[in-house]
Length: 305
Image 1 (tube, rainbow, N blue to C red):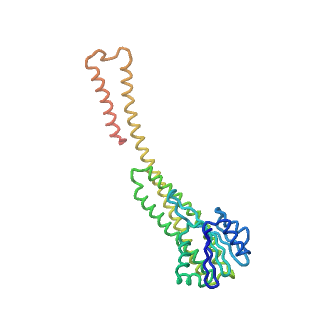
Image 2: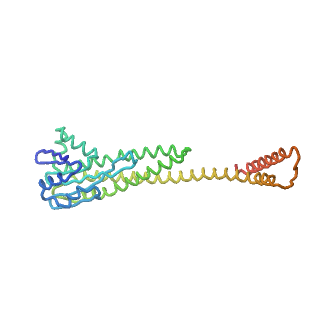
Image 3: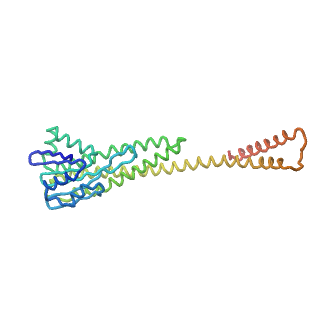
């Protein structure tokens, strides 16, 4: 059980990492007014982002991207939050570094604790979301760097690796779109709807978070447009190179046709011109080479080579 609690005046912040049934029971004992369905949702890792509003508290589920270096894709890391008058409860799987760092700073630094917790639980609630939203931008900048590197390599001869990198980046962008978009509606709700246990002056701050989310969404959309263009360019290059290979193979096949015909004819067990002549082999071989070089010269003259 990894449950930690910070008290500052009349404000309490409880953070839970990797929720267990014992943690849920402790929450049920400490906050008996929490709805059982909300406590059940905390234990589930497949919840969609949402807001459940009650008379005296909010239950908020949000998701934020977390980079998976093995699969090379951004995964959704969930954080569940209960916020009411004088308390905040956060629950996650312990992978969201901004949340962990903020909680640790409030534990160890009296100045940070006073700044974050000194204006009530709603200020902590805002600060947590703000830190997590700011964490999105470095991930997007990493995607931007990957796209720029790919732009430099797209005209290289390593078409298979380029296409593989394109596919990985495109999958990552699609995952980021799926993660970021639902958070916009949640922050819009927090900005526009007044609640007695959330300070009224925080609507401006939630509006600032919303601006950052919208900016992140626009960056992801721009990345998607760029990667689509790069995919089309890469496909065109691959098709062009394939056509070149097919053209060379076709020329070779066409040149071999008359040579195969001549060798097949002279391989027949019948009487043929030059049969029995001492220089027949050299003459036939010269004829075959002459035909091949003539066809190559003709193809080059027509611009096919």
